[in-house]
Image (cartoon, rainbow, N blue to C red):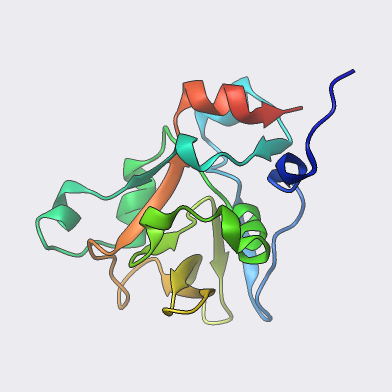
Length: 166
């Protein structure tokens, strides 16, 4: 029998529980896109969060100084394991797990998307106000555009298979 250190247990995240849902909103997608190839090949429940295995995506358009819609980023990242709002919620509770290189950026969790009462789609994100990590949301189309300061965390397939637990 293997025993885990207490500190390791705090990074085990249940990916399938219902995420926090802002009042008046509905959850559109949770975990990753329903048509994602991950849905077809894996059914897993837990993620052992390891910041060294998490990549942050910024599109070439963003790097060139242009802003893009969140929908564009979701389409670009269809074949990636996008971190969902359960990871965001866990990191808000355990801020010591947030990678230091995320400071100064908005980290958008596109693995869970929501619709508000007006029918607009949103995703939640983490940001640091200089004292602590907080959350907010961005509209995926139209008004709010994603600049080079908005990064999307994901895990590559090989890393994902090492970090998941059934």
